[in-house]
Length: 449
Image (cartoon, rainbow, N blue to C red; front, side):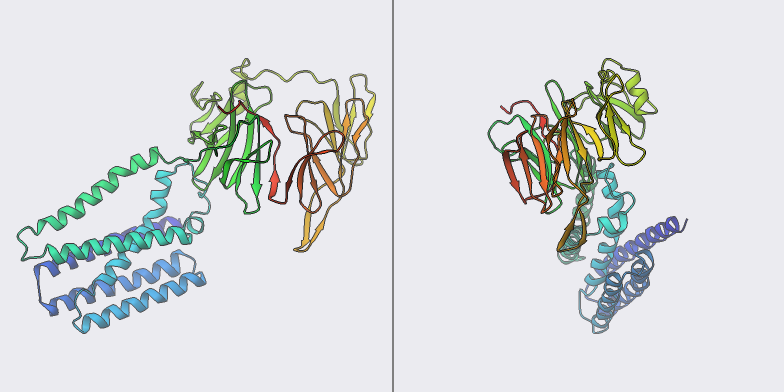
């Protein structure tokens, strides 16, 4: 309730101040070269502006120290404007006009952002996440341009100008153009990310670089899709297509192997093993999407399971697996075959299948923690077993392994955070070095033409 009240008060303040600025400009145009009238209009507008800005800074934005500095800085500008006005300096109304436009844009910016990017990821943190140095810089630039436009209109289309209406017409035209452009911006608000010009490739792996940005590399370690996403969720190969789910501050995106956005109207996607399609979720419910981003069904299902159950041909049941992974009461898992014979005993670690179920990985506690900036600790390494329970790659305490690569390679990471691919004989096939914080499995994709 308090946030709603703050929002209403903020809107009323912006509207009242906008009206004061417009009236001030109109009076100045009507009272050309009459400084005493200028003083009156400036003093009234500045006095109205001061408490509004202080309220906006100190109340709405929780009194953060940086915001407090900005608030008192604005108050200093207001006092300077009053002094200039009392000294009969012309055009000092520019200060309240600039500040008023700036705060108007600041108040309406989240609503505008949510309109253009309806599936953005700032829903819970709108106040601090959206107002970053870049966005504030853009707001200040726009406010300066609009203030300059108003100044030019009052300067060149004043009372003595035969076509004084042209100034207001110009402002009106600009405003109409901005409003008309919003639907177009929303329709085209999707990333224009394209694949880099590299040789044809057969596999892609999502990777996170040391700056925390996600992109894709191929089986030669070349960057294919640039590192400019904030997060990665999943990727999957289909018969003739590759689909990945990534996102940034503007929303969640479904892209293909060329980095082209297939759609951005869902905030959740589900990839199922052996499926011929994927499931998406919108505010309307769950629906089925083909590998090219087109709707197969409307978003009419209550759950993802309901959508899959309604189309069993698209979501076939997993093939029967003769090996079973069971939880060990003491520690980790163990594996038995269809006869109940123990293939991999318990008490070693946690077990999972590789992507094609050819191998199983036993994680003996691999997990990197950071007790301090200069120290790395880990609990154990990883081993790879075949389906008969034989050790293919023994565990090393200083190495983690992942067997989810569709080309049969095995991803390894040393305790010093170096990533590299190896084969079953532990020969290094591709060394990625220390360029990445995280690397996902290589997924098969159609050959790039």
